[in-house]
Amino acid sequence: MSDILEQLAQVLEARKEADPETSYVASLHQKGLNKILEKVGEECTETLLAAKDAEHSGETRDVVYETADLWFHSMVMLSRLGLGPKDVIDELASRFDLSGLEEKASREQ
Image 1 (tube, rainbow, N blue to C red):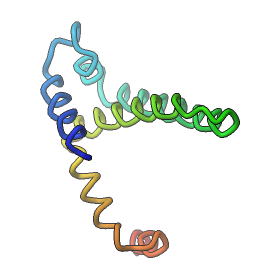
Image 2: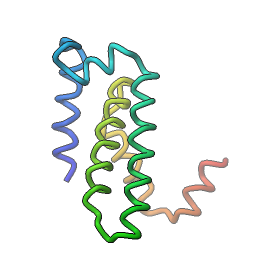
Image 3: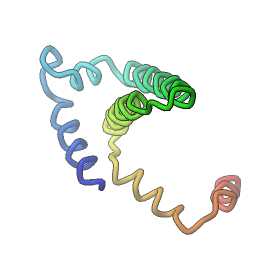
């Protein structure tokens, strides 16, 4: 399942150094972390609004579309910080055998 995330991570890494005139990813990196974070926040808001709409309409296509945008921009952010999807997947795997309450308690120590 995560193969596509790894493939995307490789593409994002390669495009960091591309020409910002021809690469959206390179243009984000050229503008800096704050611009990338702005895009993550924008996509997060759009995802939340799509979810609210889907709850009332039953139509989930926009939720999937906006979530894909959110994941994409989150991966650009991770790439900017020298991280990738494997780091997030490893963290999720480490929580797999913990209940949510146990995981939360472990962060508070």
